Figure (cartoon, helix red, strand yellow):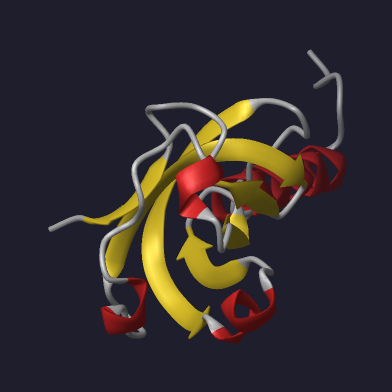
Length: 125
């Protein structure tokens, strides 16, 4: 009885399938934040910029996450107008500190921690 596929064709098909499986296993998965939705992220601080607070702008804490890449966590200058409690000492944050942020997504890589009582930015262990 003759095989359905010649050996070289079978071997090529096996190699292609193996390559496809390896590609799937090593491709990092990222989650895109959905504008208008609530989100919780956790990761390491990359950079802190509180200088916009001098002119009532949003301070920005860049957080590196495994699921969404680098995310800008925006902290309004006028915390008294927010429903969320004011964040802990933002100026004390430094690169590599682990944090969790809960907020409203305003762009695919940004969220604001202000609009809901449960929003906030805090250190985690």
